[in-house]
Image (cartoon, rainbow, N blue to C red; front, side, top):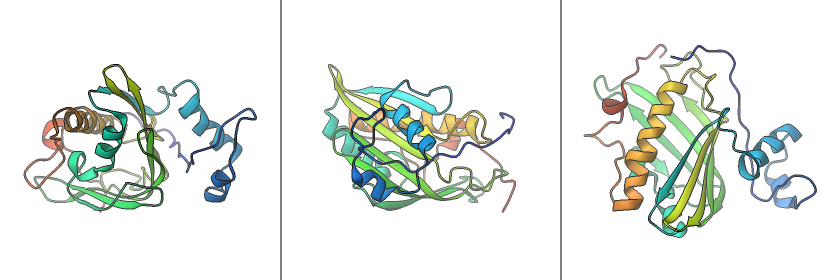
Length: 220
């Protein structure tokens, strides 16, 4: 497990803001008036500048489907992440809750509430974590305030997905386990869902921890 140093919290971003005098729409500020300048710069760099792969977990996928199909697949949380989901992730303002339990003990491992902050069909989908309970970590709210961004672009093969989890860095306690978890859900499940029509979300009979390894709760 990577040693715990300090936690880098992410922020809530919005579509339409750009740096260096390029368009900064009023919708951005009306929806996210609490952003500081440095937070806005980090968001813009993640979208329009050099990818911050050394700071935030990031992964690129190439899939044989059109961007509009890819967008719909990503928004269908139950088809690739977990069937234990309440709510929706299709448009800005939508909210959903996901939950993972240990397949052996049945104890809660992960429960987060998330809100969609960007939704541009065929191009981008992003949500931020508003509530978090991960009892196997010292900080049970470690994901709170982090943001997951899916950038979609057409390529010759179909579509390219650029995924970044802003705030999930090598400095946070869950990084190694969460990195393995994202690799499973992005490659083994989401990519398969888009490519073949069948993902591998967690279900009552299948749990990703059986593949990537189990965790043990430290707190209740």
